[in-house]
Length: 314
Image 1 (cartoon, one colour):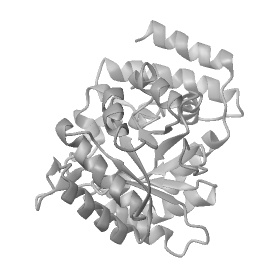
Image 2 (image 1 turned 120 degrees about the horizontal axis):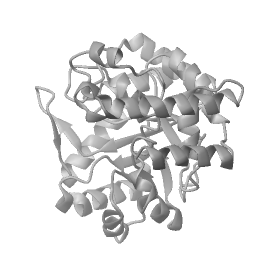
Image 3 (image 1 turned 120 degrees about the vertical axis):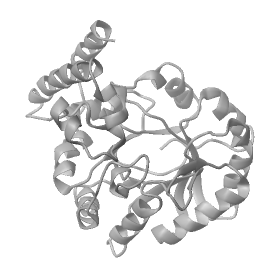
Image 4 (image 1 turned 180 degrees about the vertical axis):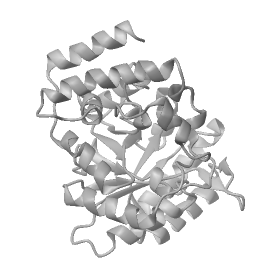
């Protein structure tokens, strides 16, 4: 994973949805027992890292992850973040002040039950003027042994250059999928050139590339599921993504019946800059639905067919 020295599986478990509902970026209600079983299943199929964040469920996802990995014979690598805080009404705000960064790391260590934390990333570079101060705070925590590795998420090349002048950027976590491929133009090549480990998030387009996202399903989503408000889940974009998912399913059929979701994940892993893909799940069955992506590799002809679709349907 870049220059970290960490060896990670091509797929890691994402826990955004495991945080549950009741906050502005939630995915609706989530059963904690199902979450713990999901984490257990992910570890059981060989996944060796979990990505989480304090903001997911305003602390709840980290608590669930900490409970689930406690007592495991081999603890997975745990990656978390800083920069998003919340108030008594669970309203999220950005905060990059050094004192806030230190407090977040302390709270994450308590919730996860891990010392030191394997990786801490700056979740969002907002406010932009605060990224240097936040990065200095993380670099100091790494020097103190509180954190093993430090990285960034959602940063531009210019922002990585700025903080990299203070301390090396070890990892990058950007959104990357056939729904949101923009980082492949400049950001991923930069990361590869500079030895930065890349773990991409939302490789299935938050469910759009699974083949199961219909207008009826979107309409049935809980009112606190952020996807109901997203243009990608509405027409005409939804039909475009459904057509792409159908093509991905055809490719998967040639690989022994792999799913569209597994092909979507494998597509991100085909980029040479990408170390691993973060895949969210809310149930053990969903883990079973993407576990094939751990070993699935697409052929040049299959990648070319996907590129042809992208050209025809931007």
